[in-house]
Length: 175
Image 1 (tube, rainbow, N blue to C red):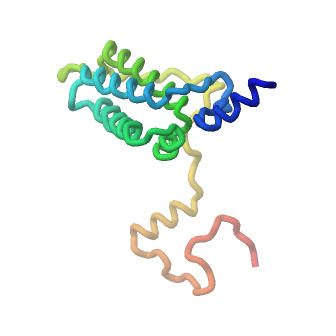
Image 2: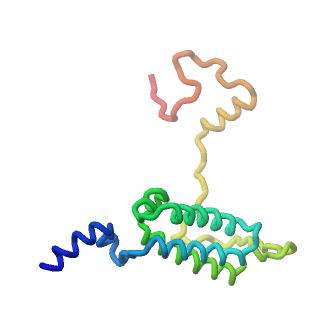
Image 3: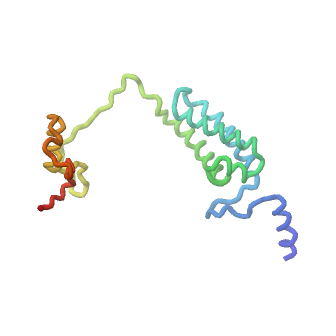
């Protein structure tokens, strides 16, 4: 009880949040400094990726922007507000994941495809199993073909009455 009376006002003065509200994501009291270090490390490690690669350009762009915001703002709430990408603890996890991905990208080198590489296209006429849906459109109504013929021949709309639409919805009603 005594500690709560003393500690709570001190915590309010320091503006340290008690929880992130996200299960498993702990509060990082020095999140700004952690983010600045992670972003600087990211900018260093991304240099191993060729300069003309889109991945490098994208990572450098958003990392520089986030680093600049973290340097300019001194409070976590303002960093969160300006970036609009979640809490600083979430940003820390994202930055750590990006560093891991940079390592994988440098290992996999997806940009290292030789110019003379030919992709093999395999055409297979084997029957499609019944549990896999066929993504083929069904037949079009006869009205569609009649309309297309009218458009291509220039005879669309000739002989139609003013009160009737040139193209009906397919639900014909007898009068």
